Image 1 (cartoon, rainbow, N blue to C red):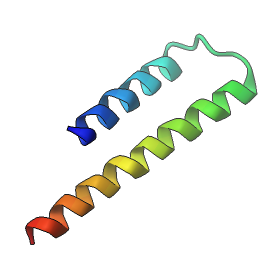
Image 2 (image 1 turned 90 degrees about the horizontal axis):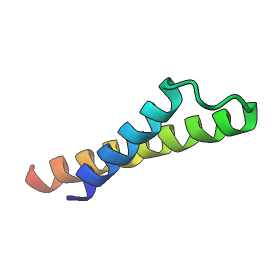
Image 3 (image 1 turned 180 degrees about the vertical axis):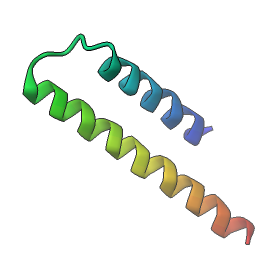
Image 4 (image 1 turned 45 degrees about the horizontal axis):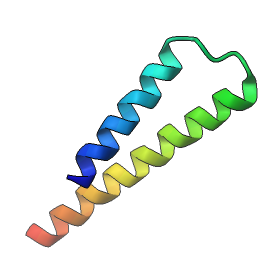
Length: 54
């Protein structure tokens, strides 16, 4: 469930980045930081689930 929520948030951030609606450099850096952070959380959740099942 949490991994699904992270995936949805990440998708929204990526869509926001790809629309080109953001022009301020600081906002773009923040958006990329959020996207990378969500990736890290998502992969961490996947690793934790794999370790529990092993």
